[in-house]
Image (cartoon, rainbow, N blue to C red; front, side, top):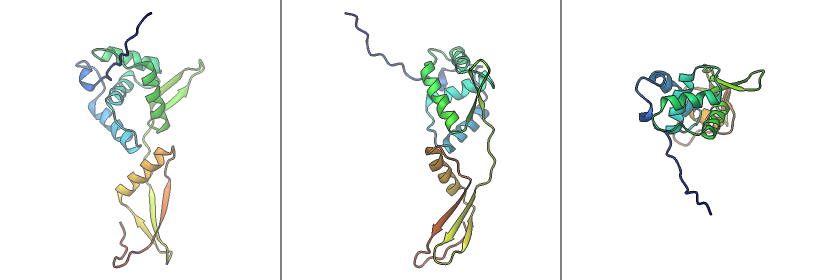
Length: 171
């Protein structure tokens, strides 16, 4: 009887990218920030994949990204299944855009960054008084929670009550 050992490859790491290959650090850093803001945990595989996506260029297929990663990395490239799962996640979180061509192939490119200002308003329960909140931390939390559920926040009104001894101030 043939025995197949359980062998799991370790995920690729950034130090495995060959010198002179890979995308610019600035472009990858901007995508990493977008991923974190969308609630995507940044693993070594995802960091390497971001390099591959940017290096392959816009409009490439998952196979072309896999081949690009194979040329970029010393050692083995991530499996096509791992790449596809992560591409699907990045599309779901609106970091990548997937277009379908006439030959029914999926082509990926970085989605344009949304620059929509989020309007957050606190509404005092007793009086109905509205207070604008401009705290970026609150917007970040709301975006992350919404992204975990596959949603995007357009605006938010949060019902609040004044606590004893504290007055409500605008954020």
